[in-house]
Image (cartoon, rainbow, N blue to C red):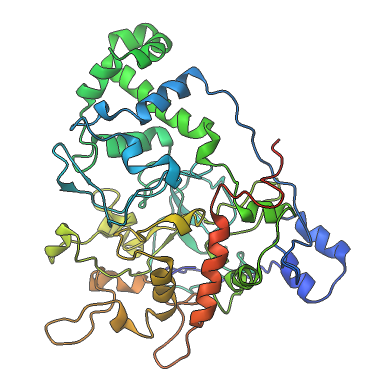
Amino acid sequence: MRSFRLLQSTFLVTGCAVLLALGLSGQVAKAELATGAACNPAADGGNPCPRSLRLEKQQPLSMMATVGKAMFFDPALSGSGKLSCASCHVPSLHYGPSGNAPVFKGGATGDREGRRAIPSLTYLERQPPFSIGPDDAVADDIAPTIAVPVTGGNHAAKSAVNTASSAANLVPQGGLFLDGRADTLHQQASGPMFDPDEMAATPEKVSARLQTVDYAAPLRDLAGVRGKASSDFLLSEGLFALARYQIEDQNFHPYSSKFDAWLQGKARFSPVEREGYLLFNDPKKGNCAACHVDTVRSDGLPPLFTDHQYEALAAPRNFALQHTHDPAYYDLGVCDQKPGGRKDLAPYCGMFATPTLRNAATRHSFFHNGVFHSLEDVMDFYVLRDLEPERFYSKGPDGKVQTYNDIPAAYRGNVDTIDAPFDRKPGQAPALTRAERQAIIAFLQTLTDGWTGETGQGSRL
């Protein structure tokens, strides 16, 4: 990790993969597994140290969640009467967007362009609240503190096999949306619903529908006397119902990929998937697991493939978007989540949330501005950004390539140039060959939910 480093950590964590590579005993390897460490796949693609995962069974939805489900699919809640939550977050596409447009068209008449690419709604149930504090790559229970950002100091690089190497760095982490501006799914639900560029609803319209529509009758009963007296309270309860639906319905967090089966010893990687997994975890190659953590927690919770943190990767400006035609327009992520953030949170300007990689292989737009449309494009950018910048960035009037062209010059020091594979300088060899990048993509395809392989999905608690 990070473009913003403060202190060098002295910790060293050795994973099961390293122990096995050194030929140490199976007993030692099993002891390491108790800490949630990963282990290398065997030559046949199997998992030599399978885990028992903590997987929840689908329970009947509560009355509140049932109302939330109906709201999720109700287009009449939008300003146009044509868009529901499910219009952008399609259940059959892992609650991500359909098509390959960089952003969605919405608004009261359906012709307004959204500000950012639509994220998936899957795997948000363990997202901690936003904070700025010590780097803990594997925690879902980060303390909700805000550290005062400063500049300077040592920047500790983050390693896929040593996520504690940067533990003393102060980093933004947690929160929902790509800038972390909401802490709960309850808060998140109101964002797109009342955004004039998205569902374009009004509180008055949503409250009026909840007061009359048949499916909300249980909500009105649950809201009691206060719900009958206050439309604002009924609206708040409706947004809470949307959150309960996303938490209670296991389709939002099924953990049903081939990788989950592999973790349990119930599937084998193909040779290219195995190669991709090893490259994904190799700190000198892909180094992907430094931020997209892929180890099982000590309590058995499956990995989310994110450390909940934020990166400034300098994705190219997407000139296909209308607002980028204004040369003064910049979307700077974390530091734009509140007024005055470009001054108060300047060391984090340009940073966006590290998303889960689960179901990433089914997406068709990537990064906050949807500038890339395939995993091949993303991998090329990760590996070649500073080696072949002309592939990604446009040229200015002087004919020179405008690197990092979607971040103002004042904040370009926040861009990650420390962690592999972003640590390469012009003239050096890329961290990954094209064949190795393809192997990582093959591994990422094992993260798609709904895998029905030789032994099924495994048992649920």
